[in-house]
Image (tube, rainbow, N blue to C red):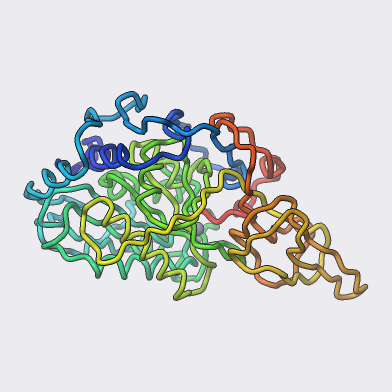
Length: 444
Ligand SMILES: [Zn+2]
């Protein structure tokens, strides 16, 4: 296996080879392997989009796949023929005997068995002053996939920054197979101002893969995408909730894509929410470019939460171990549920919101989630669960307006249907809302 050394090379081969072999040993979520998808991102709009991946969750598949082998997986662009009769152990042994090659990134050469700190600067900059973003690289002694971690595409999302730091400094180049590229703060300009956005109020995560002749956001996205992301074989994009909302640590993944499914399974015991990525997100653009990508959502903005940072790091390091890149002492194996649908419960009246549940709570249909009290009239309204499920995200206690998203429920669905149906059962109103600065109810 070799690594991509230039953007001219098609990424994804090394990881795909490994993960396809892995997947033969892992049980796919039912039916997920049958409907590979190709998100449509060819036409990148200059406007932000309101498509909400979490809200438009497709329905669950119904039948278990008897044969999880990939001989007939329908992958449109696999470079290497999967060999579903080759045990994972053989593939790993083979990979580990291959000496790694030097990794070329951002004009620098990173030798096998070494780590480096590089810098990425977008070609088009605000104010004419270069803004340099650190890019950390650990290139293993042995050959293997290139796994990328990106954090703080939204500049106020801090938990991911700390996750990248911990993972990168846990890697031992001599013991690593493959390479890890970690970008702790993609949106440095937002980070410096404590803001989710770029200085022009654009959301960088709606402009991938970008356009070298587009808006400032689109140019920054294009530079980052071509100079860094295209070197990845797989990508985990780290986020938190937005606008005073907190997320239970969770993976957001398009489970119609077999490679994404495999990546998701490798992350260990973390809640998985099926969601089609919104256009312009790094997840959508990278996956469409053949780089399986998931979003790891954990905690809230402008906060550093030790517990969720720990969970995120454990998940990422479990993946690194699952991919046989570097063995870890402990693997997080307890399975967590996969949610194929979710909904936001919104305030129907203005006032002061107090929650009656906590993040991660399981609720039954009709359970009280919280109350909203009008501070003047003392009128009290209740928010109740429209479905049985689990609280995957929620607003901090705060003053709300009618329409504000308060509780994000992963829906326990007793009657799953084919994933490919793709009919959003809930949150359809989001598609008709006017374009705003952020996708209400969804951080990514
Ligand atoms: Zn985010």
